[in-house]
Image 1 (tube, rainbow, N blue to C red):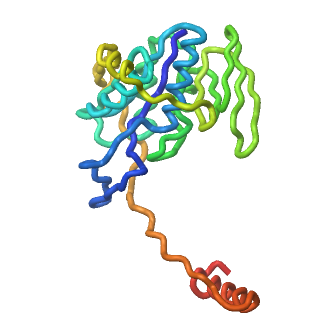
Image 2: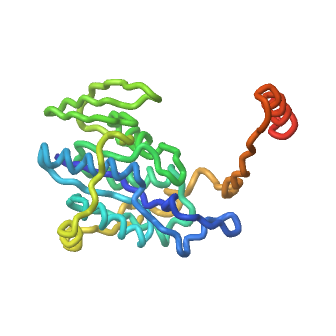
Image 3: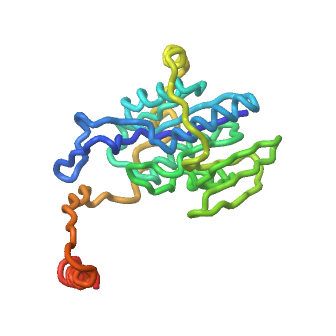
Length: 257
């Protein structure tokens, strides 16, 4: 099987993020594989182990994304591809990413593409479905179970607290949700093997694209951190007095009543 994974490098949101002049300060920031993409990588490896084939992890980003691709290879992926846009695309968006991926997959024989449900930095959840539409293949989002039998696929997907079972067929694109699996940690042998696995680097020219072809359709107007949480307040006294004080606070301070 020809198995592909869409991967994105994201900020580690468990680390402190600094913003300077409306831009996230990358100096000193920690970068990781988007956590939802880890579910996709793990599931791709399981599919390969069960059905044979090859797992290729693809990312659109800068030179530094090679580190996350090497981690994916250490987890067990077979090949990695970096479409380096560092010199050609200053501010891309989901349209830019999909246009680049569409060009990359144009001549590829695809059985299944796996992606994370969302990226934790922007959380749009657009890239996977938009790419499937461009490639004219079916897609299923937020999957929590996947069974492949020949060309037939049975999927369980999360639907906001409930489950839905979907039956479809290959070729297919799916986006992966928490609960699908437990991503493995790269082992020491895996890390050593990853150094010798192929990592192909492409640029827009290699895909017959130029800057105008992938120009962003949206503009980021402002980036800011959420306000710091204020300390809570403990109401004292009899229950009746606490209720009266709470209602008064909701009216005068919180202004939600």
